[in-house]
Length: 366
Ligand SMILES: [Zn+2]
Ligand SMILES: [Zn+2]
Image (cartoon, rainbow, N blue to C red; front, side, top):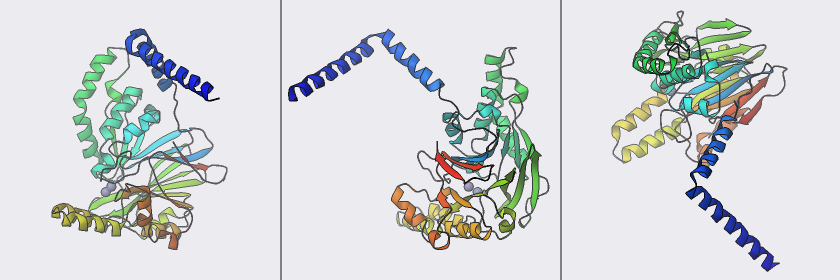
């Protein structure tokens, strides 16, 4: 037996050595391996099911402005049947969508909650990638007062890029038409900048059974800042954007199947600020502490979900970043006392399926 194992081990080692030698010294073998890898990569298909059986939410970015490897900043994709919508497009999120093989060219609408950089940082990149992938209409960017300025700025910054790509690849072949390359701003006119938020609501999209309602939230001094509610054939999801606990939200999100809520653990944020002060970075500590007065704490978000009778609460925009699994415990401190079930931490790639036949909500990971 021992001899057999030894012979087997020797044979395997010999085969591995021969294979490595073949790869190392034969260009033909190298090219064959590369060709195989390309085919394997290209044959991977869109991992987000797009059929008419469910309303779906895919978390394409769940971190706050503080850096966290493997986690993009604010981005949520809602798919109502076959139609996809993006809510915010923070830094690193386009790469997530691309790696999951989401057909970017089929996303024609982005809804911005507000214009902090962690929510808009990749608007230009996402627009360019969707255009290169084949979108033939301008990307529609919906947002509150100020959206024209943001969209015009990104359009301007990417103007030369568009002309280079058009000149190089289009050449009359209709591959990258300039008319589809620049974004169009759709300002939500009923909500005015500078006004004290009152939870005003306005329907901003109503087509093919999909109703999107913008809801004013309180993220002052950012005004207006918006949450978005998606209703589709009797099921609904809400994305809060950035906000404090804001009582008018309760009525606006009542009965939603899924509430994707931002959250910042205030006690951990203050603890981080204390350590930062101790290390001499006073200004950074002040900025960190300031943020607790315009973000909702996980316990407050759980209260909001309870009072609005929401089925599932999912945390996103997680601050401070949870850098190791055990740190979920202090981050979630106090949540289970008021909401024992129907609450979970979001992660990049979390797919939430809300079946249209009324079946239970499912959670998967791409
Ligand atoms: Zn913000
Ligand atoms: Zn934010």
